[in-house]
Image 1 (cartoon, one colour):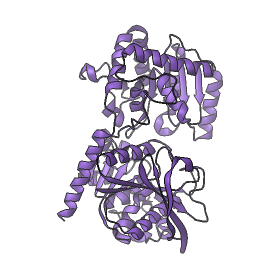
Image 2 (cartoon, one colour):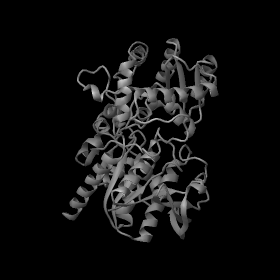
Image 3 (cartoon, rainbow, N blue to C red):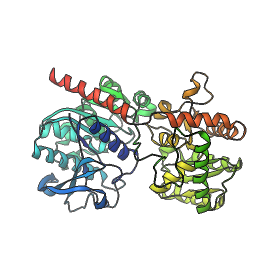
Image 4 (cartoon, one colour):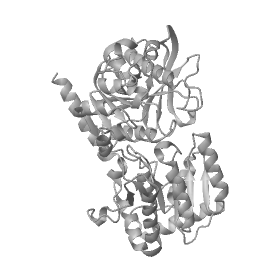
Length: 495
């Protein structure tokens, strides 16, 4: 099959969260099992040229319509991590992809609608048959409409993956007009009209993409069920229920080449799942000692707890704060690594940082190398998300011998199995879960974990081995995608 992704992220060159790693890992595994995979990505100004191979100017100039004008673009071809890329250089006067970042601009709607149209314009120009056009979240969802109705591309089937249903690309009718689509025509209940009855004039880009897609893929089986409910559908649950027959849940995998404690160049001491537990613990101790020395933290005989995340609403910043304070009260060390998009929240955690000096490390800029070091050093990783479509952090943590303490939602429920759940076979147990999104529920799980650390290390050692021994690779998920795609092609052939 020829599979073309249109996406806004691709690790390691353009990564804001887990999406970039998903595109890389899935593409690499689909290539490995024999499919032709390509990724169309904006040519951001921060992409390091040194990370690209076989760079060439594929299409020197082609035009894309916006606001009554034709704007120049070029398409570059390259390879990264063995995956063929098409990098869209948008020569737009607004410098859409020359902002030094992927998201967070006031004109994100215009930027990504333009990207969706320009990507489709490029595919129209090349006019090569595509078996599967794979789109990701609202940022490229509009390409489904361009592919089907506007340019009538030689695409057999379209899949749209939902990595986070809370972000839907809501905009005005005229935003579609600007990109050359009759906005009022598409403002219908079966297409782009937002499901919120209080805002019937809003365009919902994600909803429109769902209508045009042949398959909708939620990034974990549990999340596929959750988005059918008002709590997790974020206003789109009526549409998800209506389109449930084409909705599937496929759990994300982990790129084991990128996250490999046996060969990771960022960590001080290496280890692997097959090592004796004593070897694993010794290596983790060396990694912990290296961080302790670097950041003046106590290392010996106390639990190290932490989180690697964005301090955003979804991730539960108030519960992260509660975990930090409780860990210190219980004599542990806490590490927070992650960005704080909100200035107010950043200021609040900066104040916590000054209060917890010597007992905690709070680092507010994401640092890839440091993230690897932290995963290798921690005993426990706290993940108190309000919702978690899949989550990669818990898989990474377990691969590095760190046990998750997580809220039971989304992909957490598909990957974490509580050590005290009698319904779970002992060889599968690998962490600690709590159900309610509340401080008491999380504190109870944290105390259970630290109590085991102090009183029952043998149990923790078994959990560590269970987590490290699990198959977190893309092998199984990629085969599930392959089966889905082949079924879509059979359906197309029978139309």
